[in-house]
Length: 290
Ligand SMILES: Nc1ncnc2c1ncn2[C@@H]1O[C@H](COP(=O)(O)OP(=O)(O)OP(=O)(O)O)[C@@H](O)[C@H]1O
Image 1 (cartoon, rainbow, N blue to C red):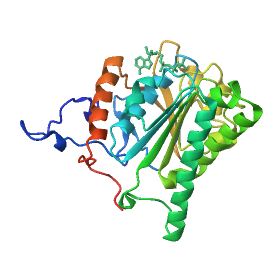
Image 2 (image 1 turned 135 degrees about the horizontal axis):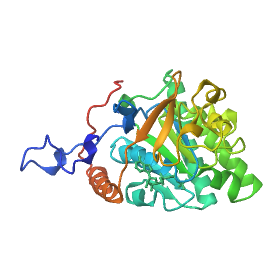
Image 3 (image 1 turned 180 degrees about the horizontal axis):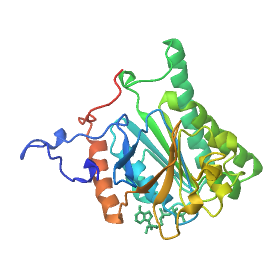
């Protein structure tokens, strides 16, 4: 398990001021689980985005919790949670910079706001002749977690709100990475209307949990993977939290996500709340230098 499960920082000397507890950095990879060899599986969040899909109860929310936990503990990331199901991400609401439940208009307003942050950052990049923001810019990454895509793009609202929602998501996924806008989107409906190829192909990481057909597995991972033996249909119903993780340019890798109990989440929220309100904290390490 990653170090953020500890309630106290092991490097903190007894009696040392609490302000020495450091948060994580969004430039560090997030712990997601283990592979079939038992090796740790991490995913870089900065300059990335991720699509998660699979049948109900296959493990998407548990996977999302790992990612949200990492982002919540980062002092250089803002957390925007959009939860059409309302209850899945709700435990993280106290540490979210913005929490939106099943309100499509609020969801649209929030995504428009993130889009305008992204546009401002592109102006900044254009003015300085650079291609992506770096740590040296001192700008926080914005981690936008959406569960469930289909709720806003198909189920509720009007034709106009559904179209605007999916257009905003597509734009943030397409242009967000270089600007430090990270979209993590989940759906229990891996069908072509919810995840058109043009959207799916924009995600740098795709995680397919159990699917009922090879074609729905391909809708998540990409056309042709099932025929090459990489199909999330082969994941058994009892293999909860098992999925195929595809990274850009790689092969799908079978992983099992780390499970966070409600108590783990409560403890992480408490720690993240402390880290986020303590302005003197600085993120650990940082990975990518300017
Ligand atoms: N990595 C895991 N280890 C152990 N149990 C798991 C794991 N992932 C999921 N589970 C079990 O499966 C249940 C369903 O998982 P989860 O809520 O993540 O599914 P889901 O795909 O988000 O479902 P839905 O689409 O209905 O929201 C969990 O409550 C948990 O009991």
